[in-house]
Amino acid sequence: MKILHRIGTVVLIIWGVNLLTLQIQPIVHSGSGNGGQTCADDDTDTDTDGEW
Amino acid sequence: MDSPFQKLFRYSKVVLSTDFRSLAVFRMGIGCLVMIDALLRLRDLTFHYSDLGVISIAVARASLEQRVPGAWSLAFLHGSPWWCGILLGILALSGIGLAIGWRSKWLTLICWLLIVSIHYRNPFVLNGGDTLLRLLLFWSLWLPLGRVWSVDAHRKGEKTFHGEVNVSPLILQICLMYWCSAIFKTHPVWREHGTALDHVAHLGSYTFSWAEHLWRYPGLTKSLTFITLWLEQAGPALLFVSFWRGPIRTLLATAFISFHLGIAALMNIGLFPFVCAVAWLGLLPGEFWQWINSQFRFPHQRRVVSSYWNQPRKGAWLRIWHGTLYGTMALSLLINFISLNPERYAWMFHPSLRFTSNVLHLKQKWRLFANRPTTRDGWFVTEAVFEDGRTGDLLNQGDPVSWARPPSIRKTFANTRWRKLWLNSFHHRNPSVINGLHQWLLRDWERRNGRKIVSLKIFFVLEDYLHPEDNEQRITIFPIERLDSSHKAIFAGDNRRNQEIERLNPFTGIE
Image (cartoon, rainbow over all chains, first blue to last red):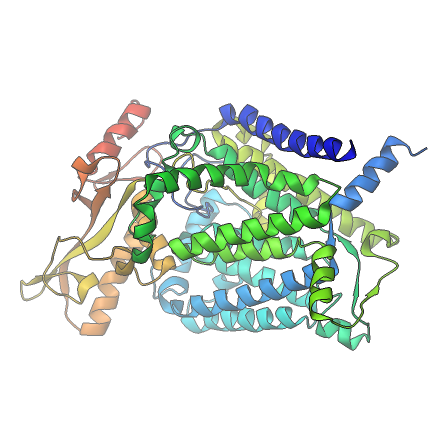
């Protein structure tokens, strides 16, 4: 019973984070004009998504 | 009966802790990476970090003053190569000192100050690995890196011991990086089609040629795409499981380290995979070290009774110091949230927060191959007209200009930093970088060959996996055709992007 409880907790945590990720996704600004991204740029001065 | 607050405190003690020995390995890894980073940068000392190179101090400062108030750099004190050479030399030595755990606290501070200085000196050559290394060094200021397996511990005569230490800033940083990266991956190539890694595989400027065999199997790339996404989303969540901590964290660290080293084997993205791997080393659980001890029969290690968690927080300065940590952690959280949609949430970034963030160089944006990987790749060709009327390509020892595809696009760039600089000029359309590259090409050629150049054009020869009809299109990077309303370059010949810019912003797009 304890094992089932623990497995349930792990599944719940993973499911919760995935759900949260999907909930937050609609607010993401998709970026524009550069046809996708390479690996992360240090955007100190190379920000393509406007000033902030 | 414990109150909910006590239960929460006990839970957070378990999930936000790591073993002292893991933190020691983390310190060694970070020290080695700092040293390697400094030595690798020394190769391009004149070209990337001096007034004789691509970005002069005046250009860097002008660019930062407009967009990054509060930015500072010790490298701005002098424009000659030897000054930055001294800074990088000190950085390399500090990295070695940190790795062996000599004066760990002070050397962490020195490494961080110098890394920030070097990053602000030339931000155009940086990638995600640099950002992560800088942030890990910053959070390390609050971590007792030198408690075990260090010269510091040896000098204090402390026996090897183990215990738990609060590493909440390290865990926060790891979670923010992976979760933001997953959130940014909104495009169907990541979420539905599973073709994102197939797109990455066709970036000739990144992938190793021997890895191409692996990419030929669509089923494999599709599986790896979804595994990547799931690992980024679900992996860090498992750090918050308070039971089975030993096996879960060992498996988690092994999975992520294998994942990053796998990426490093398939494509050249600089130190990024290694920085990530070192961050995970810091989260190895105590059970892992006990298993190592049992396997190799190391001398019995004494368990420390009073761990870092239990130390009394006495003294006003100590309280301020820890208050600063929690303040900067909150700021880091805000920065990452705003980065998801700067246009909508920039109002949250009060000028004072922005200034603080820039002074501490906390800015981060984890768009790792997101919202989708770029498919626009290519190589650069220059067309110089010499005094005698001949033409030649300065990037190819002045030989006659050839538009043929090079056998390896990746090898047309001297190293990852040069690749970043060149590709920045195309992808981010920054006029300062483009003009800097143009001026540097002229100066460098004339200094080395003594032959005057009458005119010089820079082209990017496009290779677009998504739009093969655009392949081998010659885009004129210099001279810049014109600037758009946000002072970014518009290139002649880049028809698809120019149309997109006009479509997205018909009134203020192309002036």
